[in-house]
Length: 161
Image 1 (cartoon, rainbow, N blue to C red):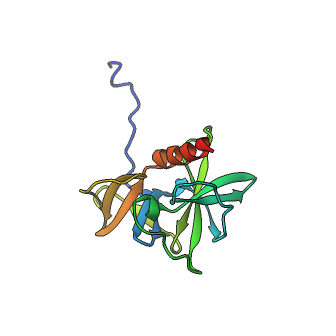
Image 2: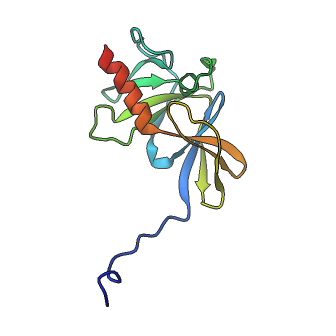
Image 3: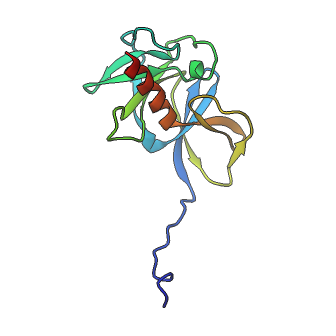
């Protein structure tokens, strides 16, 4: 038996539990473990001289989180905040970094979906700030957010202050 045969094999999951997060101009697709909590809409503490997409900061579990409008980050107008709006607290994927979590405004309640390679297809198109990839999931269009780019953009604003 050669050394190569002894290496463990890593199976690619056939299905990934994910969430579709509703926005005013579409939806985001994120793995379930990215979402930390859904909270009621609340007014953030304003941020001085912030970019339009940086709506302010929220206090959550003794942390100060940036509240981001993904729609504005993509160059669209600020969505109307209605009673069905929610805030998604997402993990940046950098638990040891300066910004382990941030918050996004949602236009409704997230929906659980199971993603399989057969159902997921990459779509063409230019990606805006904060976008990793445009996809279609069983015919529904969605955007996979670039959590690292969102974290960097928020940290860049915070470091200017």
